[in-house]
Length: 230
Image (cartoon, rainbow, N blue to C red; front, side, top):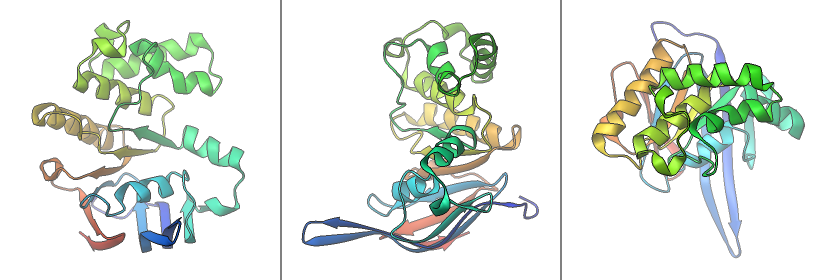
């Protein structure tokens, strides 16, 4: 970004501790992080460094053991489960490493699903879902089931699904982790397109250094701590 835009996610002194019998695990320690609108952030670090926990905390899927997280200046700890659900439904889009597609639903139906849950009528759902499939180049695969798709195609369905409710933030957890390098590069290009053309804020967890591109903010984690932010 050429200049700072408004703050969209803020974490202040966030800690996440898990109690495991006689042991405790500090998954996150004193995390301070501000995500600005339309940023592309890459979070990198070895397995167990806290990357996925950080993403879950940002999404309100896990509560911090200490500290605060705000989305659009709203403290998540003060919100009801229903409001949190609405934030995840309309403000955040999710992309998963293992796609999380429903095996008995077609490509089109998988993309429609977030709108169905949100109560959008079918006459409005189908055109919107088709537009997202066209954007990722899968309009001709609309009637295929997940087992009939390649890994890259499945991830494109996941990307289309993440966009269908027009969220402002996309949280991606290892989106290329189960793909070959060529397909991973294609998925990365789609994420860049979402950021540059659709103006989506992207927070992407990865261990794949090949995904790094110019103008991406790189956050490195180790042992539950942010060790660099460049």
